[in-house]
Length: 399
Image 1 (cartoon, rainbow, N blue to C red):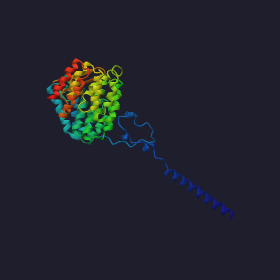
Image 2: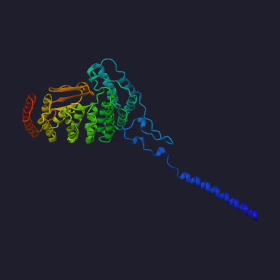
Image 3: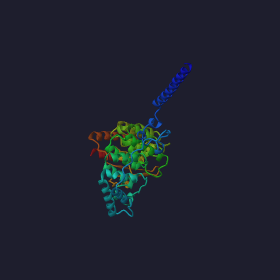
């Protein structure tokens, strides 16, 4: 009996131990933590433009994430059309430009089917520039990449938008960012605005640091002023030293006069760094005077203090009557000059801009207000050239 009892006890103990091990394994499986890859934020939801593509995910993962579905391949026909665009050689003549534009038009006519072929070229990070001063204006694009980005806008649809967004995350070229911004704001208004602004800020920072060479950053200032809202003021203020006129003219474009306080700060440094921010701010404020009393007050105070250089009075007086400055290189943009246009180029930056009279159509009330404002200024110590310029503008306002 004693032996039988021992045998039964051993059997019970064995069963108990086996059950305990099984329960222990089950419990461990049930409470296993999710892999790091599943807990990490989806890279597609990262804010584009803030991190380089290679720095999106720093944390090690216990397993590889699910691969993205492959992009659809380009068709032989669309690939051949893109190849024809890349083989454009020799001087640009009306005939060769016509053939090039015909190929581009055929590509656009393929619709969304053309997007994979365009993607293939853009992802190579290569380009073919077209000099507007040597016939490039006949093509209507500064480079092949810009032409293909314009084609994406013409094609439209979700595939084209996605490729535009993908390109925005890798390019720092100011014209490309501006082109993509127009595309996205036209076809997906507001949806990608922060992505656009992040790309613009990154490009501007690189330009200010001299990392974009002699590339004109002008289009970036237009993007920030047009889409940045009140937050753009801080972005534009950061670069007043290397780009004093671009910064001032960009601040003048901030909606609802939001850039006027920053322009007022630029007036406080007539002879110190940032160099000549005072003059740039004066000319930017002058074009705001028809719409904003604060701008008129600042200009009047400068006139009373004798802080307006005589050489600036002609452009300031013209702004009182509706002239406006634009950030752009007229010749490189293929813009035809008009009577009264004045173009400016500063090597620092570089910076290119022009002024055009009669750009702003003033209401009868604004004309009366500006005429009274000119009378106030004429009561101060205005130099001879200033008096002459102000009287011309007042006469123009009366017509």
